[in-house]
Image (cartoon, rainbow, N blue to C red; front, side, top):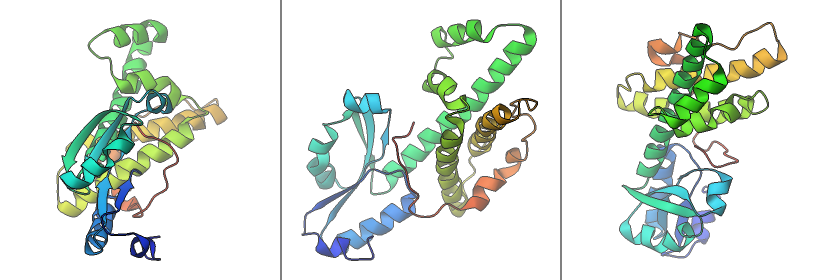
Length: 237
């Protein structure tokens, strides 16, 4: 839409706030175009749930000039409990993608923890209570039942794979070694997807143990090269 007059129609000093989670390079390209027209851009993806938004408890990550972020502050006050200025335009997107990759990778560890517990003989209910009350507690753990549920798994897998793919594409282009982060996130998405497949085919047990191809270099995520403006219909992790 920015190639069809949107920026041209904006008055100088107008503030454009981008809250979708998209490719940081795309946001920076928009920022450069906007700067040429005197339009201020704030890169401001969010983390949290719909309930958190209604309670004004979202995390908003911001990227842009201090002037632009200050001008957009009244908007963030309507939904945010925490606002973190991450740097320039695009930097907030990078912070959000790293956050989501950690969230996703944790889901793989949680899945494997319950697999181990089941094989040893600890009930899932007992183990969940221990993990939620112990040092292993995390937002990923709190949301894992919802995400792994067969009714939600396809949508969850699509969004999480999109975000992990964006980070993989960016770090690959920059020649950055992500260690285990992208690889484990890749495995997690496979596990989430397998929960839906096992629901449709009860003879197929959900497992992430056969998906070790991601450990090589998160090859599929790096090959999928997300488009610059992927659609996002809901708030992310």
